[in-house]
Image 1 (tube, protein in one colour):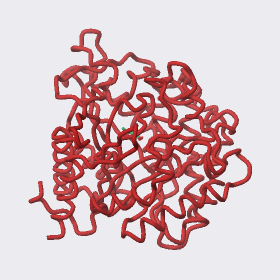
Image 2: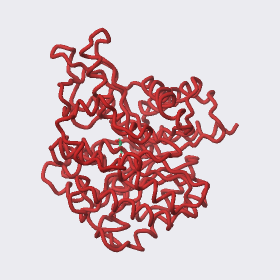
Image 3: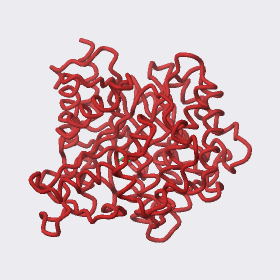
Image 4: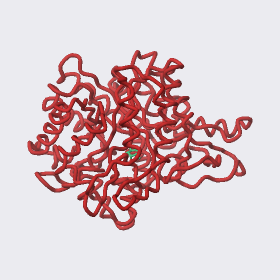
Length: 466
Ligand code: FCB
């Protein structure tokens, strides 16, 4: 791997999200987000865990940034907690904003490019109706404007949303993520309102940021292959998964329309009722980059006997497909090696995805791609000193970096890679059970210990300069 060269401006980064690492859930004016509320629901989170302390990053931020410098990171993708910044859906909270301002200063002092995301799922609980309420999109724009005003002199790369598929379909139809609803009609409304929030957020950021700032979004993608390529039913199942997970969010942004086939698939969900005149023009305002989150691909069938069923999580979603379209879909195991999330390891899916996204979306819009999340949960076993020799994770990262390199060789304009995640952290519905970090966190002592994968990543980054 170290033999492969990336462009000298390629951003080598790591990613985290506020609720997963910060803790200090009720300090300095922060109030409940929908995740704090969801975590109190019995049975919602494995082990009854929550993000009240998490990695305590809120109090350990300077030393965490020092750790990033030791690894040699050139970029750090973090999210801003809306619930810290505007806790009651009323006044903004200067102490909350100050935390992010200090974080940005600390990063810049150490030569690390700040790459904030405005929304990584921790919606203030005080906002009535959450994402089913159209008004939430306008609230998002106000929040975006305030953050641009606070950090725009130092932050140049802004991301509106992280994975709106998760905050809509998985959260309002799948029931696995906050607020834990299981109503597909709510999910469709939430999906549109998130798309609208993105568009309104882009407008607000553009208006408030200095020239030269860049604005983008981050989506989570799957690569859906028909279990049997000869079967028209399976090919159609793959089309439907691609439609709902990928194109429902790509096409409004890049083409100013929802894909016709998806509209037909979900005609029974009342999406039309939520689309006001002019919404799609707002949503499709030009952006400057696309963030790509990729963990695995899926094989799908529409036939009852289409293959051995994959475990419910194997589709890269956290619970089986909520199956809200008009036709039944099943995920099929391909027998590939799996991570601790049961997600099948398929690095070539990343190459194919990047080439496709470049050809169909990035290149026509003239914008680059960044891999904003990629990584794996593994069953880490620390030795007596807390060191984790996570060879499986090293292999995973190496294979996926090779896939990125191959995609670039095929013409895809990919300009950065952010490994998920810097630290072991609160893995949403899985609590602290799943470990994704390249740095181990001992949840008793909160001590951080770089794993073999962090040392490997450090060497890859350092080798680029030689
Ligand atoms: C993504 C999320 C991120 C993390 C990884 C494993 O879907 O954006 O917060 O949980 O999965």
